[in-house]
Length: 284
Image 1 (cartoon, helix red, strand yellow):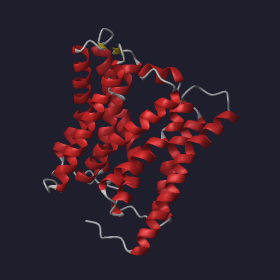
Image 2 (cartoon, one colour):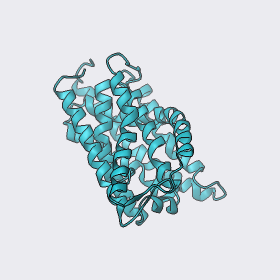
Image 3 (tube, rainbow, N blue to C red):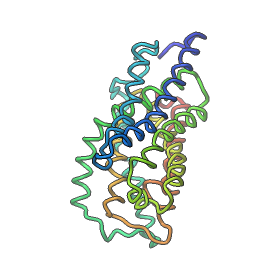
């Protein structure tokens, strides 16, 4: 258990969080500007996008190494002992909610599985799962291992932690939706203007943040949320982008595993259930 912060440590933590937030949120727009200087690049694989991805991590490394943040609260230990059920849950939450939501949508006649190719989908799922464990270790070391961990150490209320972490995490993605990602890809997920999509996605990520935050706090390990995030990436995106399922009559708004109302409510419910378990003392 980490000791409470002194007044000077609190001031330093707040200062460093402000620095981190400014740098992280600026990184995507600076990356977009870099791409205007280098127009001859492959779509969705640009130097500017790489800049956006890596700068928050570099900021965390510098703040932890040279600005007094230290490394003790990053949750880098696996902590399997007593947490195996939570690791199993991290692996199955997104597939289970996706199956429930899309299955319900199919029963309502608003989700079409005619294009679903099980062999192709599950082979890609396995490949993406392993790739994204590596990728998301670096991302979750930033958003849960640093941002969330520092907000927890400031002893903020749970709702403030959810809102701040979720808003910063979501706003960091805005350049991705508006600049780096093809508009056609966005419209394949939800047929709306990219700016509206970005705002809707930020709200959805705040909802997801409850679940991500509580899993991190329960296990005290960034690896549990790495697995949760990797499972999400492997389950959800290519299901729609590769045409395995389609929606009709506005079904995406309710049943889409990326941004649908039903999955969002289920993820929020799971996150609040995790919070209750933590507060009731049923977990460490």
